[in-house]
Length: 417
Image 1 (cartoon, rainbow, N blue to C red):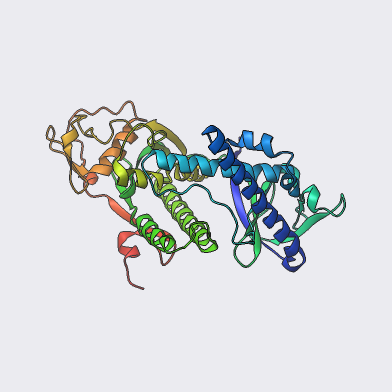
Image 2: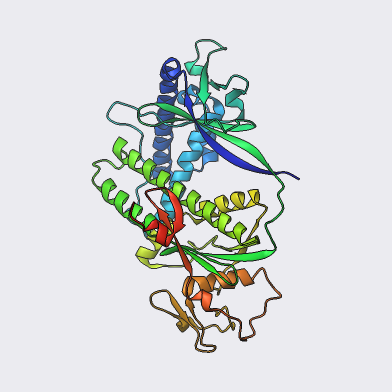
């Protein structure tokens, strides 16, 4: 049975000059609808003390004139995005981030910026034979029933645009481009082997991977450096919803996504090279709820894109025939992976784990990863025997190299050009 994954291809628009005005109109319309919905949320908030979800917004604004500026599904996507932004803001505040700002208006003086327009199934028609996509306008922007935006696109030569699920028109700051979301069949490859790997996700070290006789460590320093830089640059913006602030946010998201893609791809490749057929990763759903990690810890967790990372890991692993299992990681940071002794005091400073019962010394994150690995190996008993675990104290470090945009062994990533 073939596996199916989702791919997003970035396409340039070859007839940009011909379609730019129409796309500008749609982008401005998307901003206007956002602003109407934002004002509506504010009014409902003051009257009821609650923020409406996307279902309420859709029902409330369906008859508004701005709703008909776009295809119905495109308008719905705008309202869904706003509702999600409010949910994210509320979660930040709930977890102690008093500096989090609620979603703002998309407006600069009297000017509306160009917002991204999402075209779902009813909003586009794909012509793969001629590399063209027809995008629907809303009723208010049509001059006739047959009025639409016909974009001629170009993608990389090795990309086949098929089974298109969704199209997004994105303004980059000086031009429009298309983000084409496709469903791709990857076949059903055999697993590289029958070994298992465990992955422990963290903050200082983004991830630790244990394979049973070897460990890999992926530091998260690059993400922290980027977060610090962009927070500092954003603080210089006079308006938190200014064009410059949004540009910084886009750049920050792009760099983070690239980091997550690079690390997940390297992780899968390293596991495949070690004949791993199953990857166990700690299930972190709900980690933000019910626990106070201190102000600094809560901020780190909200910037921690582990859900997005695991999704990338799952589809990349599937392409190699590797299955990914999410397992309960409760207690994995406190228990000794060698003998099973649990003691809160065994994790000491500087990421070191020392077991007083059996004398094991290990990197704390690697110890957690090995415990996670053992959860998919029920026959592996922690008997306190002579099993060699020296590898747990000396993981191989793999760093994200900013100069190449790829992950490499520490000695290569640090090497001067």
